[in-house]
Amino acid sequence: MRLTKSIPNMLTLGNLYCGFLSVGFAANGHFKNAAILIIIGVMLDSMDGRLARMLKADSTLGKELDSLADIVTFGIAPSFLIYYTYFNQFGLLGLAVAGLFPLFGAFRLARFNISSNKTSQNYFIGVPITAAGGILTLLTLFGDLIPQIITTVVFTTLCFLMVSKIRIPSLKEVPLPKYGTIVTIFLGCLLYLIYKGTYERFPYLIYIAAPTYIIYLFNRLLKRIKK
Image (cartoon, rainbow, N blue to C red; front, side, top):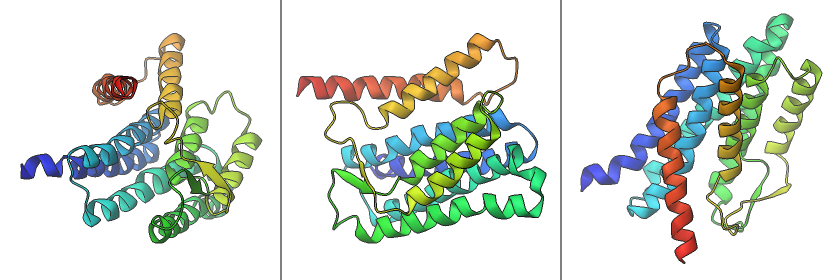
């Protein structure tokens, strides 16, 4: 029983570890590997909270651990990825600019943690760091097709949107699994890479995580339909 209760925290730690590995891959020039690991982190992040509620394993420890994992995987890892792929040409200035992303993300997470019980469950205040980090990751994944100026503008916009007071729908009332849009984009990216016939070696975890997450989403969708 104790092991079952710890499953959500294990997924959260897996999310954090994906962020750590992503930084390592980016530092060694394996940018697509680094991006894929962040996307796997998105998948794990979308599962841990739901599993905690299903297993009745919600805890203050789990919530704090989730925030720490988010700042690493969706704040620090994407900022290093964007630095190595775009901003490194500007030297220390580029590193300083890339470092703004986790700063804004950390502020957004802290604000969310102290206000989540007071705000509506139907919307977020500001863009969640998970979504912002995922978007930034996809831009680097397809960096060869996107002009650098667009990536720079999106990077700057996401930083300010995270700390803005704009209300973002949480999609909890939509009869689709949470993060379904992100997963659709992820699968589209995967199909595109297969279509291009790339021979780069991606983390083998992707071949386990992708079908597992698809089964998870399908199961969630069936439960909603039965209701």
